[in-house]
Image (cartoon, rainbow, N blue to C red; front, top):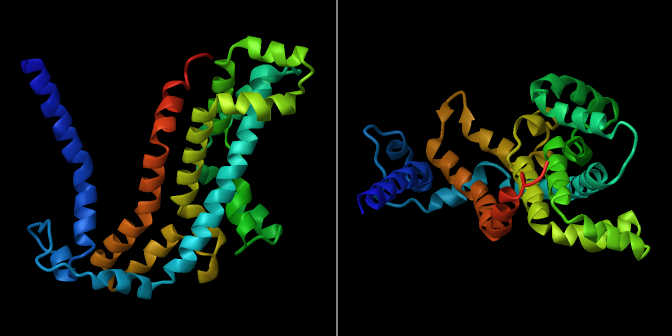
Length: 270
């Protein structure tokens, strides 16, 4: 009994520590600026400032920012799923020269810091004429080593009998991948898509580097408009952050079941 009580207490403390920043962010979104920056901390506003929502959208064209973010995030997610499925299947079930070496090199790219490739990638984007265009925000992130690794692990976990039976029936690799293998690893596909969407939607540095016009900005860059030489408009920044985080929270809860299944199954077989 004591052990269970202690476990509940630890879990409750962890839940409080995890959720408190979100509660503070949401409550601050509806405070006045003096309340938002006051010390000691005032958790809930004395009078809820609902007009902060309107003021947030007046401060910057968040409608255009959201549209750009969703276009980029959906395109990146679809591309990552496609490339990860094909590459993961190839590394798991196809035999070709230097397969292990090539897979090792793909995994090695995960060790390269983003800052190292920032300037070369920008130079390539600029020479291609993609500055302030959607391809600059999408193309560099259409594939990544971590997603390929996850898909390879998922395909390795499938029984070899499926592959053998499909081969006997004359099913080609591409048809087998699309019609049989991909549906069988649906939890991992959803996990890869979720990671890709969140990574793209939450990106800040790269969109800030390759865009300079409001029409091409994304929501994460839009949050920077509330910080300037005169200081930070904390109440509006928290209001904008609350609005920006809602799609990712909704997406996580919608895909939570598949995300947990995919995460638990990622390391079944190496």
